[in-house]
Length: 155
Image (cartoon, rainbow, N blue to C red; front, side, top):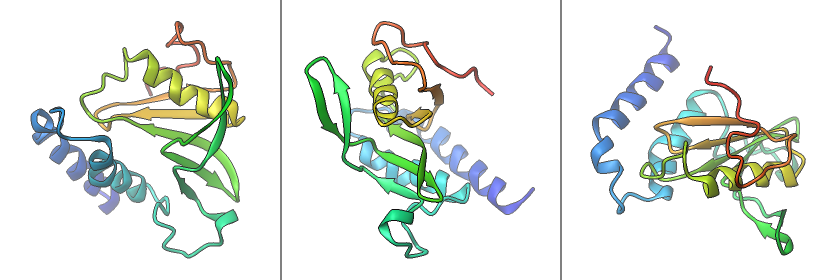
């Protein structure tokens, strides 16, 4: 088994082994990002911490960038957890939630992820609590009461 794949397997096994404790209210989003989500993307080859010291316009992963998002009151500044870029162009966002959030049923979390990407004209959004990852086609306008709209089937 290739090293990166075994490292991802170890990360997933560690998460599964501690799942009961990770789903407590005390374990928050910032911890799951540091403990599992950041290492996951790093193992997939993304430069999450900008170790290559690229200039700001060329950074692969932008952490919590300010973005305008549309909501019922107009434009507001929002901060998705991650924007992943290729050659300086945003390709997808990732919105992280703590493991206790059910990303299959939490309409607000689903809508939030899709709205960030749709408002910024980014074609894909990933919503994750690390236990699960959900991919959405965000070329379709997000609708709060249609959480399945644009969801890409499990792969």
